[in-house]
Image 1 (tube, rainbow, N blue to C red):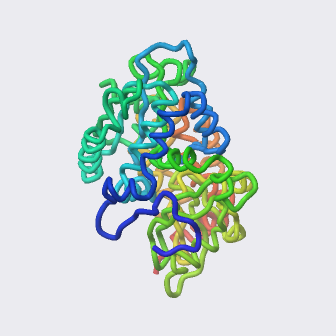
Image 2 (cartoon, rainbow, N blue to C red):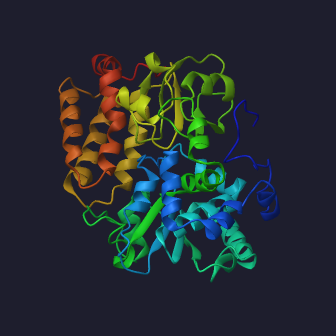
Image 3 (spheres, rainbow, N blue to C red):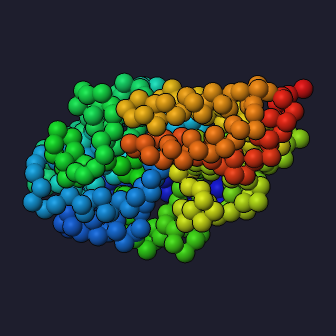
Length: 425
């Protein structure tokens, strides 16, 4: 896909195959790892990432360097580094595209982050539907071992790292950090509320750093080019780096596009996604995956940046933009989303286990024409109660409902007043 902006993470993307190890090296691959093992202490790597202002690309936007720095110097061994490739959020497919484009970029990022946290064991936790990506990773990890980038005494240094691929059992909740670790340890994948934090006591009770596929892919470029270079890639003052936006819905060219953090939503849709489909008008979008709120037309020109979206009560999340047009019933769209979240709840706590099916039942009644005026305040109260759930799953799950009631309450009321869905013929 052509772009007016620098391609960093997708620079080696091919239309029909992955980039080979040699192609990755020709673009500067593994030079950052070579430099790190030769000239950097693990603290130097942490500082370099801190200077870049890299925020996690998996949805939470936590500073990556802070994660690495929170592993205490006197913490126990062995330590673990985990790459979360359990990409199950509806509308989100950037990690799959990245793994199929340039797997060694991710592998190198994991190794460098492992060095920064002094981890001896690395795990790529991948969803079972990504079997092709899992096989690619296993094959390329073996090639990296043969070239001396993994295993004992990497590139003749004192640092060693074993990296394996683990296929998930396949639940959305497994993407939550602590649930993922429980799954790896063979336990029911329920979340664990900190403290202790995973970097203190994580996998098998040892310090563990976990980040997203896209986050790891950024690290080699930061080491090679510097923190200021990474910040300068963004279009906003407080932003940093590029972002892989995966756009779907009522657009002509749904796909993944690597664009600067802070690029405007309107530019993504009109210049890259080919505009709205014929006869369609932009009504709303989910700007960062299924667990973000509906962004209405008034924010069509917003900067796609963590801070900008936060200022209007939303989140950048995973950068998965799901576009809805003027003919789309957002009540029906919300029913579809809540069906997913109600099914994927781990059932550990009452607000999530009981609240999501209750919300789903009310929304289905409204969509079917059986809604009552009292259902609106009931939904509002239920959404508030789900913020008392044990982990972040439930607040994310109700984000579409909250925004539906905030920005499109008139549409909900129309369903109730007309006793039918006004979008159905």
